Image (cartoon, rainbow, N blue to C red; front, side, top):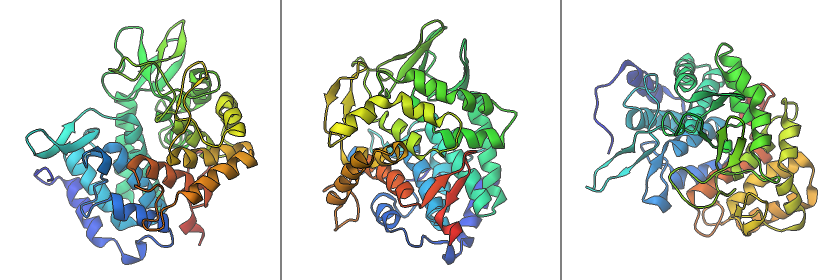
Length: 384
């Protein structure tokens, strides 16, 4: 159930755009997107995580916006944007960051459950709006994207003493004391940071982009990306448990995206080679093992060996970037074997996270999209 609020001028613009979207902008020729959207996106434009109580997250909405742009599906893009703005951002993405979780409350009402922001999702939403404005030549997308990018820069970027600017995982909760910051390496895809630097050269993005390879290299442990790290001046980056948890630090469901982002980064992007080198532990492991590990300890030992099918999809661009052909073929073979012909998706029971990793990995591998060194999005439908 959507929040019922007065329509802002932005909302009216979005509604008009939705009604005006031409049929010719519907997705053409990307079966994986059509199968994904038929299972995970409802008629309102809400990305549904069926394995988590049918909740919706800003992450899911942000990925849906990106994939619909890659698919040239403007009708779905507008539905996703309209739902996100009305239900996660109080009706105005130019005025506030979206809350990260929406779903069924204990009293049975469907509503925003957690208004705290998630910076990676905010970044993907801003990026998708900016690139939608450019590729579809729609200035109103660009305007919202710029406003959101400016808000991210002012509220979710901190200056780490002795290091430089850094994207925090959210607006609040990640600076627990005066000399400690909690960070997530997978929240910083290089193409997105580079694009923000080009669009907002006066903001913190240029320095952040320049320092990003150093951050990713220093936050990796024994050649593996970690889910969470802390930073303290004089100590640098160290593996850490997820906020609010007391389990040991690992590299797992968050960290798998670090390999994915490294793989889809443009070959000529500054620092890409150094980032790939810093992830040598995963590269070495996949040379001699059939599946990516599900969980890795900070010392490089494997806690759980058999990662799900989405992990294989995420490592395809990484292995291709490194030229590890035998390991690449093993992951591609697994994807072929685990594609469900009845759904067109991966796994016997397709799960939200696996399919999102597959959308990125397969979309890039089949040249549906790529990135320029400055972060511009290149899409197949523009080349046709």
